[in-house]
Length: 225
Image (cartoon, rainbow, N blue to C red; front, side, top):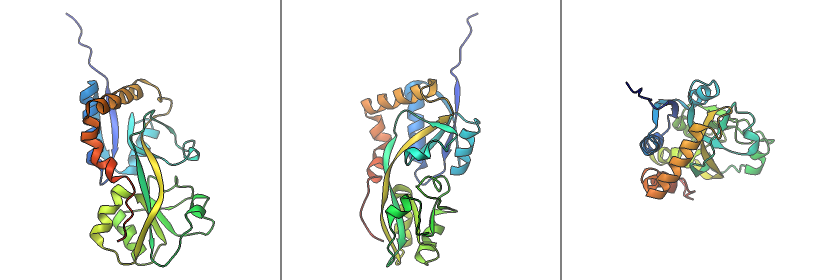
């Protein structure tokens, strides 16, 4: 009797974000296109990062590539292929000027800034970890903190809903979004499958179908609450 060889199942930690559905659709499209078996678990951002650095999952989606200095501190590899580029926005108190250059160089002026826990130590300075997007925006509006930094795609819908009269917004930086792999797996089998799969999806139009709206929404939109 011939032996049936089953494809390897890869464990994926998918971050729980307002934009999670886009990534879930992309992962399912990749699994279908490349005949991969993915066991996808949606978990909080910090948990996803922990799982891949602890070698308990094969992949963590998405991860932020801020600057080269951010990479050595992470006990995992970045994938070979960029998912897309996203605007990250600083929401701050109206009437108070924040020197973004100073923030990126270590926050020498000691602004009180919060950021999502998954990126709080990757912005060029150590931001305080945010509990929730809404909670941080409310703190900014009430003057309890100077600012909050996170992706435009995740934060703008909440900022629009809250209609915060004391909050202004400005571009902090544009960053690339990747997927993370276990340490040493960049260029390995899973990385090659993801890269080939993304190229195929881009070629047949399915990447645009799954990620097009997110990519468009990620381009900086200069509006004010």
